[in-house]
Every structure is written in structure tokens, then in C-alpha cells.
Image (cartoon, rainbow, N blue to C red; front, side):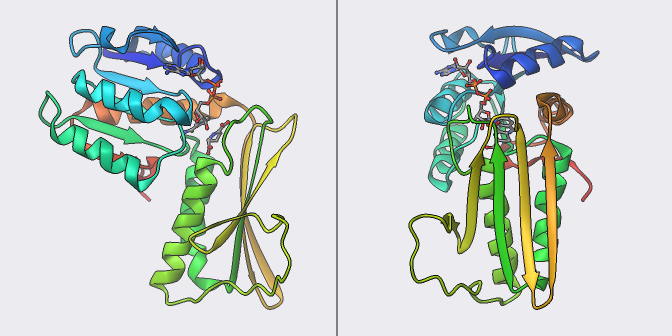
Length: 250
Ligand SMILES: NC(=O)c1ccc[n+]([C@@H]2O[C@H](COP(=O)([O-])OP(=O)(O)OC[C@H]3O[C@@H](n4cnc5c(N)ncnc54)[C@H](O)[C@@H]3O)[C@@H](O)[C@H]2O)c1
Ligand SMILES: O=C(O)C1=N[C@H](C(=O)O)CCC1
């Protein structure tokens, strides 16, 4: 059995993870902690893998504390920058256990992971590209971590293919053109009734491709979380790994 502790266990995602861990045949719940709880309760003696779903403002500190405790961590919280990832890499280099892992996924839903992947495949073939993400109104960050990651992937694929900037003649903009991530415009919608949705839009003269992923329910993230827990628990992924696509044969 893989012993799993959950940090952020009372949250929308964390509570689903607690249920998923309790219901899977090969995992058992060790500790379920939330804000105010002492993370030093989590040790290699009681926990194989920690799943962390909290808020972007605290996630880095939690991960650094957990690495120092000698446990592997699967992170679903958003807000990861290159600078934060470097801090985690430095912490892992000084970690108490050899070969410790931190796995971070902007999105654990297979639909979103594939949409992100297909967007990178499509990107070199279109002059224009934009990303729209649509989420529930309780989400604290914008744009979504997934949209940020998709935009970065589209931008990298365009650059590798030698494409220039997307065409855009806008002369006035009060913010309606969205946030620009590596040259790709990202738009965020917050609407009651939505859960987590994303569109990558691509255009050429006379044609358009839309790649859309919809997570209607948070249970859609749980197979990906359990896959990450199982993969990380093997010890085969030392260091920092970003993206569930690393565990799929894409
Ligand atoms: N990767 C994915 O597939 C995926 C899917 C959904 C949500 N998310 C992300 O996961 C994060 C959590 O989303 P949510 O909807 O569950 O949020 P939420 O607000 O419902 O839950 C966050 C939980 O973290 C707890 N928390 C806050 N500070 C803490 C601390 N210092 N230590 C421990 N716990 C603390 C809160 O009390 C709360 O219970 C967000 O960043 C969200 O974007 C990722
Ligand atoms: O509900 C959320 O919050 C989500 N956050 C992640 C993101 O920001 O990409 C994944 C989708 C749901």
C-alpha cells in the first residue's frame, strides 16, 4: 500500500483527494492536514507521497517544508514560476533522502492534458493563436495555471517553428486583450456554474481550429492524481517533474 498524506485536505480538491485515496485499492490515507496544521507531523515513517492542493501564496513554502521532511510530493496547486521551481530544485539538492521527487501538474484531467499537448502540435501551423480559460468564480488566481502552461507551450512551439509574433493591430486596450504570456494572449472568464474549461484558438486566412477541454466535475482530476502518486512512489522520478504528460505515452 502507498501511504498518502494530503495537505489542503479540507479544500475543494483536497477533500476529493482524501476520498480518492481512501477508495483506491493500492493507497491508504496517512494524514489529512489543512491550514494551521504542523507539517512536521509528516515523515518518511508515516508517508510515502504527499499530495498538496492549497493556494498559490503558500504552496512553495509547504513544498520546501515537505522536502525538508524527506518525503516525495505531488503538487496540484497553481502559481509556479521558473524562480519557484529553482527554489524547489535547490531544496531537493539538499534533501535528507537520496532521489526525492517533487511532481507538479498544472492540470490532472486527461482532457486538459491532451488539449495542452494538441495545442503544441497545432501551434506551428497557424498564424494566430489565443487561449481562453473559463472557471468557477471561487478561483483565486487568473489566468489558470493550465492556460499559462498552454500559452507557454504554444509560444515555444511557434518559436521552434520560426514563427514571428501573432498579428494584432490593436491600438487601444483597456485590458480586454487579456494577459500576454510569452506573446500569446490569455483571457480568463469567471462564471457561476462553470468548473474548469479551456480553449486554444488557432487561425489562418479562412480557417480556424478550436481545441477545447471541459472538466465538469472535480472527480475528473482524480485518476491523474492517483497516477502521479503511483509513479512518484516508484522512486523513478528524482528531482522536479512538471506535467502529467511525462507519465503518458504521448
Ligand atoms: N492541478 C489540477 O488539476 C488542479 C485542479 C483543480 C484545482 N487546482 C488548483 O489547486 C489549488 C486548490 O484549489 P481548490 O479549489 O481546492 O482551493 P480551495 O480554496 O478549495 O482549497 C485550498 C485549501 O488549502 C487550505 N490551505 C490554505 N493555506 C494552507 C496552508 N498553509 N497549509 C495547508 N493548507 C492550507 C485551505 O484551508 C483550503 O482548505 C488551486 O491553486 C487550484 O488552481 C489544480
Ligand atoms: O479550479 C481550479 O482552480 C483549477 N485550477 C487549475 C488551473 O488553474 O489550471 C486546474 C483547473 C481547475
